[in-house]
Length: 395
Image 1 (spheres, rainbow, N blue to C red):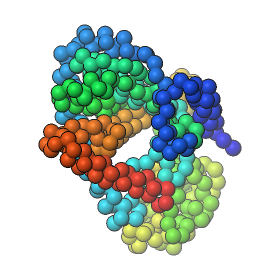
Image 2 (image 1 turned 180 degrees about the vertical axis):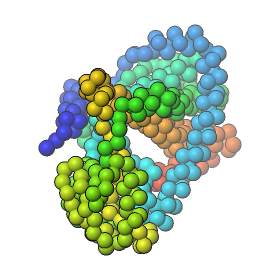
Image 3 (image 1 turned 90 degrees about the vertical axis):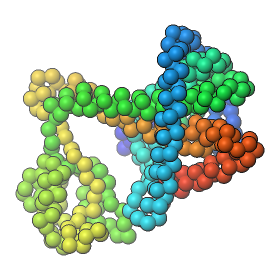
Image 4 (image 1 turned 45 degrees about the horizontal axis):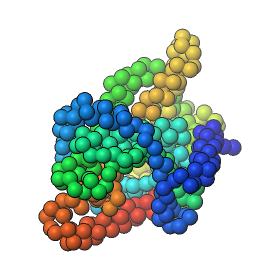
């Protein structure tokens, strides 16, 4: 049976598909693979007056922020480039390693970084608005015309990922000094990275202490099975993903560390009794693939918690659950803003990092030679990303 989050995601995609169909004549669509992979933009004037107002009032400050963003942008480009190269090396040398790049979607599937739908849609909206508004703000601070703004869709047959955009006057932008162009390009990724630190600060110093005060551990959740050439004990015994381990051999297990400590005292091939919140199981422990002298159940584990009974008695269920939900949202906002901000600095053609690198190569070489090097560098990193994404589906 589909859960509420999945149903909401399906409804959202259906509404988005209907909207795109009804507005198809008003959309500016670029066909990447005709009728299969495409990118559509719905142009508006939303937010342009606010960009003008803020840029005019804080122009000098915005210019300094833009130049600082260029520094952060190039540092981020170096970091993400190294990370992609290193991750490919790790994928080939350590089969158990996970890919460094993947699709972020509100659906559970192999190769997908799953984010619950409501977290996903809020995060996409926040990331897009912060990113594109910053591009427009720095453009206006440099007295560069912004022609339009709006929202967009990346489609794979149907529109699947919403986005936003700001459209500066490209002809005018290309005539500006390189430092102004760089500050406009770097503004989006820099703003997402800066927002990520703001979100993690709120999560760490405001929400986390409050959440820790109202929750208590209630066992160890099985989040997934470890995949290998054969099935491991947890899967063989029939423990379902999502069950919470609460006892092992009649010993209470409240924390992940409790379970780890018990398993360290066991030997491979030893039989243990495991009680979860759903059922009881007898499991024959396997050998740990990384150290055959250690016992192994072959499952990915995470701490499970619940709202304290005393808190529910005093405040009910809604407020405590809302607080823990908000904490989860801010964690997701940190992870996705930081990840997508860095990803936009990959030196690939249409991304902000690619456009920044192109300007630098034009400065170092002539335009023709710079574009040639830029093309080869972009193709190299595009192949790395492709291998990372594919690895997520085949590992």
